[in-house]
Length: 207
Image (cartoon, rainbow, N blue to C red; front, side):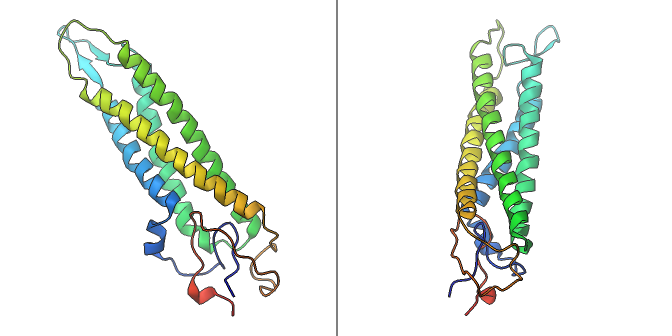
């Protein structure tokens, strides 16, 4: 028989499989979100400011320093959220209580959804502000344009992670599972979907 699963993962206590972990859709999307968020954070913090001939430092997003600060902060929080959810993904197979797994998956879904919405706002804000920017002297808008592009990539990355998180939550919510995996594992064996968390370890399968 197939190993019992809840929210896409098998019995608690299995060994961590790095090769299987790196192939999970949610992990792939979050790694993209992590890398792009880091670039967005650094570029907006240092690359989208222009020093005028008068010595004044201005933000290329239509002179709005708050927009530059907002873009940098969004990149920073994207990195933090991606790292936290990657750690949750890696540790998910050690959680034995089904209700705890449910809360973990729900947290994943909410955070991913919120980050998707934030990057939707960020993309249109940066794009609108930069397209309205006018200045009479030469300047380099390379990093400002790249930041807009990577805000869009971040939106896609977090949107993809949100989709698979929702699939995982639906998969687990539709199951009738015991409170934990330790009590009577032979009753009601259920095969769950594989939407991103640890696959059942062959060593934990029930025959």
